[in-house]
Length: 466
Image (cartoon, rainbow, N blue to C red; front, side, top):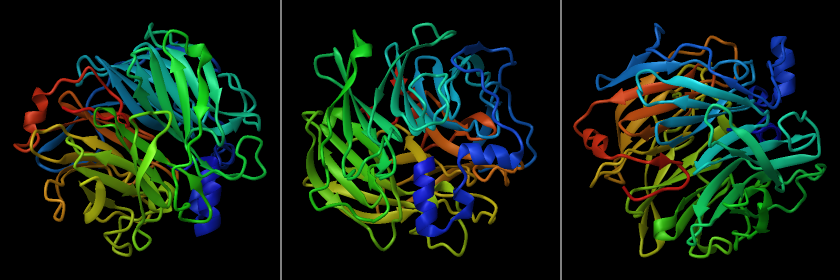
């Protein structure tokens, strides 16, 4: 998803008026600013979620919506968009441009809001490790605190103590060059250290926080017993052949597979395969490009045995209707790469197959594996294209096996729909930007074996073997 600086770059390159609004300008456009209760945790006062009564919900026969938990104050303003998800035990953590929420999913058919923390900052992508929650902030703020305003002084990572789910506490922050669009956790082998790869777009030459050049990622080291002492410990250049594209450098997203000592980085114009045996000093194994089909290399997903990598293309930065007959099936889609003898080899492409209206932003976005032994199956959010479940066991001939979607969003927002769709302990959880947390169930012979897999936690950018 586009940040303010990424939107500006995309607009300059593609002349996309629909993708050019900052949060402040968008709030002015709709006539009101997002409600904010700075630096607080708000306990749940709303009822638990129930199945949506939306008349425009459409699903395949094997998919049904079992619950919807709408956004709640203070995280429900016009630009208080829901973003990424993380899971731990019977809790889901929902990022939001104004902070994050903790949701009790012990009964997935009745999700209950436990707390909402107001802490504004794009995108607030979220991950969790033990009692630590990490937020990515890709927007310049006046300072690092939750009471900050839009400014020029700080962007990066914020850390929270989530030992008390009803009252998460801000712990500290780490400033990073060009902020943090997304981040990826790699647990240290000593069990005492957490490494975090920070991905961010840049450079912005006139920015105090985003100097040029920016062909790098940043590695933050967090001592788990003393997270306040977290700091940047390296800034490796992972582009031995330079970086494709002229208007953005750095990476959008990195997915790590620590058990395989591998990571795959989606870096705007490039895909990069990394050896992360030493997380502080990743080694480049291969750099690949697809100048014919890919616009913005957005995200990466390994299959369960790390013999394939899915790279997604966020054509237009999330602000365009690219799921239409005018856009080729290989653009704004997923490319399937086989990983053979340590090298990536491109095979087929997959794009959500239902044509969307020109008012519906739709492009490949965040998804995860559905853990089925011997099969390669993925669930993925496509903004207003909804949620697609697809099988890429045959790398050359991927196919959709289930879907969920709504009609065009009626809120008037340029951006809407499923930001992230992830499978966790028998259900699909979709973070809908405007409508809140959807809980979806798929019942299909291909995916039913996954219901026997129980996860203790799940952060999509840190893959495990299931």
